[in-house]
Length: 114
Image (cartoon, rainbow, N blue to C red):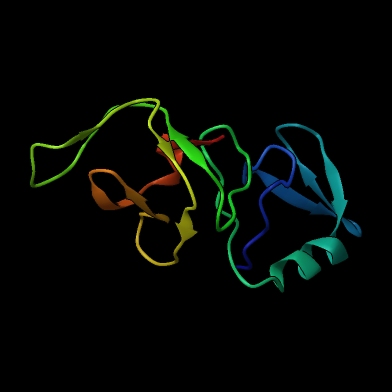
């Protein structure tokens, strides 16, 4: 079975083909199958923050909740700003960053674009 693309508007994966278009059953958005094929030819997956904004290398982000660092007594506080992030592929931690407390790998779902 082929993998259908997620909706570019609401990012949900409840889509189906209808003639020359894909249709999202959740929000009703329609887009051309050719446009979806061209988007798949890109260099990688799109990484989004907690609000759905697309993140890029060099962006500044803010933590949306306190995060305990595994294996130490350090807690990264909510509202801490991180400048110049680097996106990495592989694993479930998408963002590599440097903060006052050290270098960390973070999940994008705990960040919002500043």
